[in-house]
Image 1: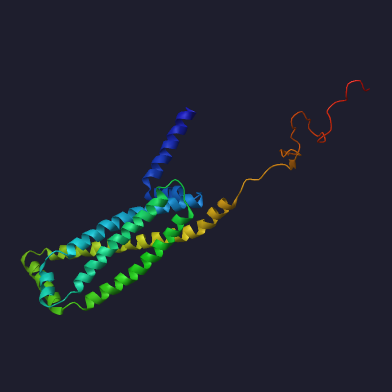
Image 2: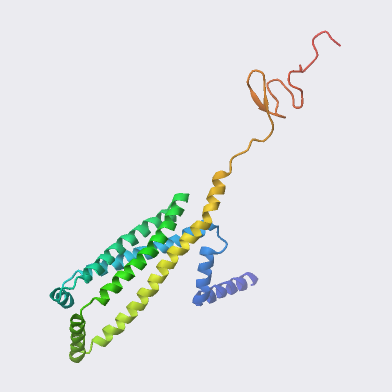
Length: 258
């Protein structure tokens, strides 16, 4: 009865923990980061960054493909001699390669058998490059949107108002677009934060690798040099010798002596 009651209580506690999402999230976070060595925590963080890298390779790739398609807005751009939309397409294409490089850098750490100083340096370099490219891309996109012709914007808005008057589906599309913008912003913040956090953690783990590389094995005992060039440690008997006996002294008395 006691063992069955204990099993029932244990299963009840497991169900209670499984039913609370906050408790499960805290336990999973603790398993990944708490009470773990620094290098293992860095690997777990790189796994999360690798997932985000692959997601943004897909997102930026789709954005680059959609920006090159011929639509009513691109036709208006060509009619008014506006070419900055090609710059926006270029930023999406470069962002695809940046995300692919991040996936490669984080994969070498998360999937490798051992971590070396070169991998830690690559994490720091990618984080700096990602932050710099983010500012450059934001500046180019801001210039592109400021240079956009008002006629093309009015044409796009007129098409949207016509859709609202005919079918009334534009409101739902606007709501979906807003949700997508919020989700994209949160994903992007998680991506940049993870890359910077992995670079900071890599900088903290670099001294650990240096200390491990500088540690060399030491010889136990005092080495003794013999006349014939043989080396032995003090306290270890040589051929025909006893422990603690001076080197060169015979072990026994000669025959015929008392």
